Image (cartoon, rainbow, N blue to C red; front, side, top):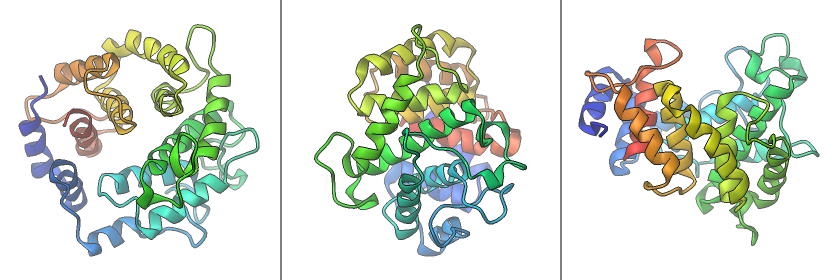
Length: 273
């Protein structure tokens, strides 16, 4: 079993003010101060979306999804900054249902966000589709609800789901990064494309014993966020992996260095609460 008390203690001991505010929201729904929310939202461009640290003043799909994840942990998807960003994401969708970074970002973009790269394109489509799915389930985070499955961004997410499903191989694998799998599975699940989602989950289950703690936490938090129940077989396996990899100090190791261990631990807490 995951030791949530130890995980909470790790965040309290090593997290900054934003990390502790995220923890308070995840544990008890305690709203952050307006000043803290303003600091997290800082840097949004006038048209919506946030630039990446490598992208100067051009809004980035990847960076915007990362910031939405942080704001979601603060209960702030319904605030104007997040709503502008979500509307910007929706407007950035291509006619084929996918997303891609602005070509101006090509010289500096990391491989997972590089314009013109098909693996990056599929990852960004899954990531943007996921956050529009999440927002569409919350009337505070978007405009009037659509009558179709998916909520306020139903049309956008439906086309994204079709694009994701169309790239699946017969064996359930996908031609992109590992995270594309669980983000796609979440989008497809909420679109009631259960067969396609299950095919991906079978592949993820096979890989579960080798998943890093950060990936297991991200996977489980993603599937939980779209309403998969705690007894769902993929979540049971992911939480087992988290229990196996929790450290004695209560935290989990990030794939990006010790400075991101608190971020990974917060994802694990979201996945296991």
